[in-house]
Image (cartoon, rainbow, N blue to C red; front, side):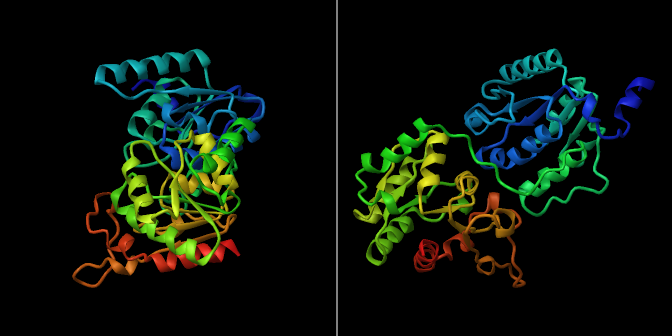
Length: 361
């Protein structure tokens, strides 16, 4: 290793306000995690107001970043296709970043690849999510090891603190337009929902099966709410999850309708106008929280402390004791691979309905 590269990898002090001209952020995350990166990015712009902020994102979720006043440029990185196509996309990104000449890289994606590329880009300061095999490429490091526990926003904030960015634990709303609000306002009526003013949104979709409450129970919930309180229930349709929406609506037997497919910004506007949303630990939960919508969180295998936020009214339903091993100890550490579903299935329609009624008061 040359003397120059050794110095480049050595710990550095946080950049001074006068030194920052451009900040590059890696944030190619899924919907919920992308939303949880916004507070840190906003804080970076607030800390270095004259810096140009460029954010590398997953093209599917660029709407999370489009229109945000603290984001100067959104750079979609398409990682689909063959290995050759992916390599070409990364090489184009490196070339684009080198032309932009960022002083500071904030790696909020936290893969080994982004950690390495943060150095290849040539930025003087580099901070990110420190884990084994990655932290060696950053030269701005926290004074204490990052805690990979607690709410994801707190974890991200701890990472950017090394770059001299004091971020708050809060959500940042999605930037929506009047056109988005109009589509959202008309969507329930287009679906045939009469009680749009007391709208309860139901989200049966979840990427991880262990976090997915049975779709039929959403239908049973809609029937229970129809008989107990005067609300209109609309079922959100996620891309590729039309079957779950259809199952929920069929089980509702007329007590719920399927909302038309909405863009992320249109869905954000719909959530902002809803009285309550019922959802598992998904991107929709974080989107609803960002828009200030009260929610019933079907936590399933997720510790509610990791996903709930004190700034919004929320009721989290959590049955960790429903899943135990032969010693009688809870074991929910590998829920991405869980096939038992004990904890999510233990949540009853009755307790969800009670939680919705409490939030409607």
